[in-house]
Length: 375
Image 1 (tube, one colour):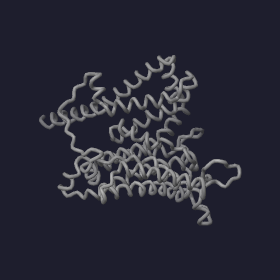
Image 2 (spheres, helix red, strand yellow):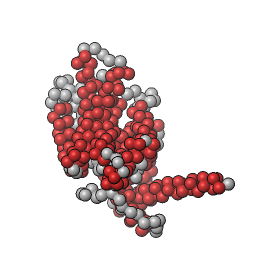
Image 3 (cartoon, rainbow, N blue to C red):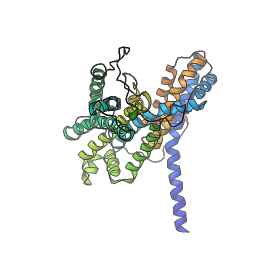
Image 4 (cartoon, rainbow, N blue to C red):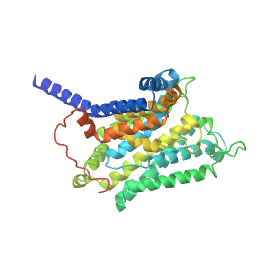
């Protein structure tokens, strides 16, 4: 009987911890939606019509569901990238640049590799190579920041911001120069179309949702498994909580920092590679603008948990996908969606506001073990 009581108590504690983890983000979303509704009312719109149109645009049909899933795919990869870095005590603001590098190198392998070899490749070879090129490009770019952090103490926030500038400007140079589509009808900076053998096929006929979406969900599980079921994941979480204690326990902190940033960059690079191979079939400037920065908000909203990142990605994707219909039905500016997203992030980051509004008490004293970002 005693073991059964212990098992019941364990289940109760697990469910309680899950409910506490979900409660604040849920209330933050509700609060942001309510405030957004008030603003819509003030500017002369009908919040019920606006939100109904938003939901219809995001989930009102098979095509709407497909487009929401498409929007969520890069968000999941990039959100996982930032969340993994968070769990290791690192702040990766460089997902934007890593994603761009992943996209451009994936496109390069996608269209140029058959030309270099002089013959066509089968899909089961060409497609993995194109995706791998994008993942490695993002991983190496982030790994440089990890090495600078580990061996010189260079702060990853500053370094990833600077690396973003370098990556985005290098991408602009390449796509507008040596990698630009030479078709005389092409007047914008974009690469040639990738070969058919480097493209991810759609899941359903007539819809744009592709197998890259399924890969994103698989990667969310892989990240969860890595963090919770492996020795490396334990080391990442330990370094994230307290690097000094981790070093005292015999963990190679420098190695863990580099690996964490490397894996984070791989995930961000995958976001760009999957967009190229599964959706756009080429890389063009501006296609990914904002994905890497939105990923920071997604990781925060998801509490750096892979499942939370997936759910937060769907939320942001639904808002982005449904915004067009909301604007068409109500004539309200689409910028309202960005405003609501900002409010959600505000309430999640400043959870004390939500706790005060809804009179939620903090159970137990919260002890902060990690060093500040400027430490």
